Length: 242
Image 1: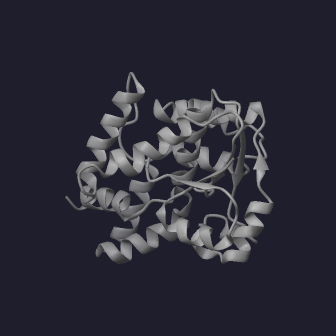
Image 2 (image 1 turned 120 degrees about the horizontal axis):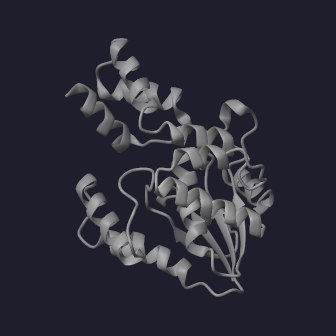
């Protein structure tokens, strides 16, 4: 059976229009934000549910049904499955991808990664939303298959990010892998996640863009590598304004 892990709800409908065969699992987490360390996986889910319930307006039970249970479907996959991980190049998506690989690390399923089909480096941080059905099919046709070393690299990346071991992340970023073609840049951004976004947003505000909408737009252009949504940027914005 083919499984397609999609990087967010917005990709579901465009993916269905491709008529590519397989079942869909949706990744609705944002592991780039909030605490990640827990002693057990059950404690991890509880911690993430508590954190996200404080930062979003989803209905009670949403995390368990729409987020955690989707990951549990991956946890329970048989070894005969082919798992296609549809993720983007920026840090937001890469951290989610690393977690999926960590979760799947003990299965013998076949893993592929599907990236957006950017044409120039100027477009590399653009997500799947910028591409049409034919381009999504093109992406799928160009998917890269994970070898054991690639999976192990993903596991190490997740564990380093989870522990905020930025020195280890920078070291791992030097690894060459067809499955992580922008790894060095992404790991460098991850290592500066506590300082660089805040410094960039401060410069934007100091330049006169004191309304959140215009500040968010400029931040998203300058620091597209982070892939931050408005919730992540608003948290930093409010901190700076406070």
